[in-house]
Image: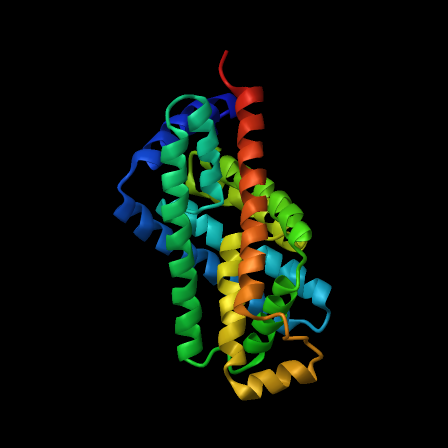
Length: 264
């Protein structure tokens, strides 16, 4: 595997290419990443259905969710949270702040599109007309009710771990090493209840789509879920706070790694 010092040199070049890449290619690679992360969210939703104990469901969901990031790494897709590591490229003068911002904006929009694509497909085939619907409604309600400050802090904690996962994965030189490198930190953030903006791009719209079925709305009410916060405003508040936290956490992690591990 690459040493941390070797990773800084390696990623500086990688991030430089990301910051200057074709916007169209960035967007479609980001659609793939959004789809993969949403798939991990779908798996964690099914896990929460399988266990009466919610803590056990969260743990199993945390063991399944990393599928999404592993697929992102292996396919070379573009993930907003992981691309905060482009901070290393900026500090190494391999990319500009403008180029990094350009990348993050295009990738954010593509991730949202990919997440919505899977949520819409699942809604169309009726996947939310069951226990999965209740699970995504419960998740959406909790996320939309999250106060702004807590969303920022949980977003920071999340993206420190996601960027660590990307780093550990990219340090691996074979597919097993890359998968294991991504698996552990992502499992920790899910089990810890931290907030990931791209995952929320799936969970909250999926909850809204599930609520469009009156039977699921009644089931949610029967389950004691307060759905009043599941609104466009609630979604925007969550995404704004969590995205801000993800940016702070990811960029801070990248800057610390660069400062401590860069070649002398």
